[in-house]
Length: 251
Image (cartoon, rainbow, N blue to C red):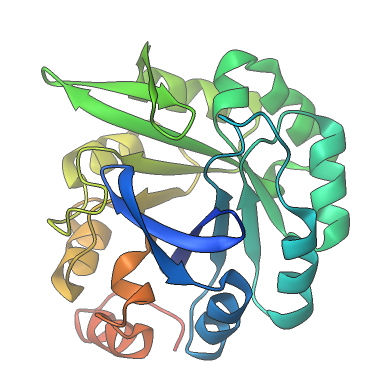
């Protein structure tokens, strides 16, 4: 059985880690390189760094930070934000990133998923999907959740798998930052629909929420931010509890 992964997410704005609720009201959460180093030391399986304003501000992801992270962190890490070309990905992988995450650029030009997976291999291409449940339907949103679309979450997930994505990072905008639990019903449906790993994001507030997303939501990995950044759930303790619940994790 494959082990389930615990992934701290560091949303980056102006070189600092920030965290908000439902994608707004951002507060400072610390230096991303120092946080990344700390998480690697306490047992995180991977890290995700997202430059959350890169797409809206039409600029490329911060290369200097990626170089520093690669220098100080010994676990795999994914970088996302403002990535829209083979050249962008090539630069980031050369800076030391293990994977890249694309979101808005993939929706605007779906062929990008094919191009990147063919060039670099699907194992390092993560498609992030920010979606919001509106009147019972899950709709994809772009540019850090600020631009709604009519695209159905599940249809888009299936399409990106077919185009060569190696993983899907699904963030429920309804649950983001609320600490009320993950969108397990949607996650379970995604898990049934696609054959690539699903990373659950949005809503972590307790150890039980992680247990639930691995059992009820069938997620392959769980990503969280504020509960880790502000010391509410120590990763070491979380993994011990998951183990007690017969969920395979790397200790």
